[in-house]
Amino acid sequence: MDYKSDISCDYANSISPRYSKNQVFLLTLMLLFLSIGSQFNLQIGLALKPYMLLFLGLMLYYSPQMTISKLLFFEMAFISFYVYYDLRGVITAYPAAALRAIGATFILLIFYFFCRYWLDQIKWKDIEWTIIISGFVFNILSLGYYVMGLVNLGFNMQGNGIREMGVMIDRSFARLLGLTNDPNIFVFINMLFIAYFLTHREKWWNLLGGFIAILCIVLTLSRGAIISLIIVLALCLLVGSMKSKLMLILGSIGFFLIANFFFDQFMEVSLWELMMERFGTVGEDGGSGRFDIWTDGLAYFMDKPLLGIGSFNFQFYHAFSAGKAIFMHNSFLEILVETGIVGMILYAVAIIAILWTLVQAAIEDREQWWLVITLIGYLSMMTSLSLVLNEIFFFFFALVARSLKEKEANIGRRKGWRI
Image 1 (cartoon, rainbow, N blue to C red):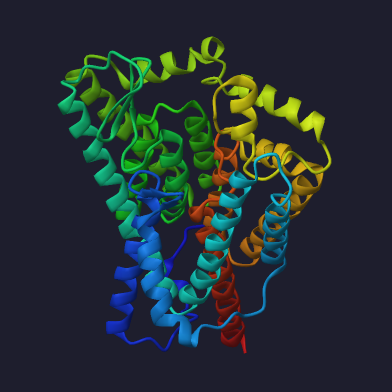
Image 2 (tube, rainbow, N blue to C red):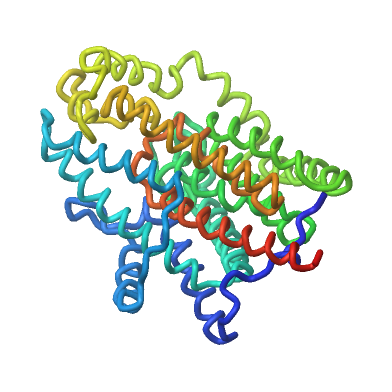
């Protein structure tokens, strides 16, 4: 079965065309600002990111009429976790770090409730268009920024820790950063776009957008990202007609072969060889040092298993014991170490709740499957990233809440047809 965008009714159906165009522009801008925030920001204790400025302006405009509708169970579960996360920062060895986490949580929760209200004011079809537009813009600009970096480097990939525009030379691998500051962050952001593109592949532009996103993800040469991509691609193949599945498989192979040819011509090395060489270094670098970091984290957890060491404290514990402040690079292990078994249970309940809610919704309305796939893509990437507090994930929660309302509207309309 294929997705058909024309079957979706509009939950917000009393919006004028002019207002609709303005909302598409603003939401596209918001998605792009959210996507580039890891790279383009100003450090003022907390990172002042581009989306915050747009968010502040929209908040001032909408605040007089803002309302909060009844929360779903998964929303209450996430809020409960983040309240506990902040409370766990009250008494810690490094209270200044915990205070940053509390401030970030406060901003993100306000951002969440605003997005929850704002998305209700936008037609679902307009939301879909913003995902398509911002997905294309983000990936094409990231690819262009990567090529510009390679040109500036003279296509010389020798070295380590060198950053040039959209390229990071990591142990003589030219990895795509795009418009972000980390290859894995780039892939995490892209999960929303690629899941939408590849589950709505009956439109040629979505299929093209999916192929461009796949190419960009492969160019990150991130082992965890490529594994996550394979998982997402496999899940995308579970939806759609046999014809669209064949198009996705053949198109992905063809697109990869073309990219491989250009790499071979301009960089004198094949993309396939780069990927194989990258995976071949797992045993040598211990997952880019992650295995050692996780071992240190588990040692801190064993010392305080029930309540953890305190929110946002791992970096400082590690700096004290190992001489280097570093992220955990695993969101779930970070939650376990910093908030203990209690925090891990709260977070697990929230994750299971949103996954269960989405799967149930997808069984009733197939349009929800792309959100299920996005969530699984996010969770797989979070095993190699520290993203306990992340605006993209909070926006996704709001998008899920809005999509569930659209699902109810779709089901109600179909029942009306049967009468």
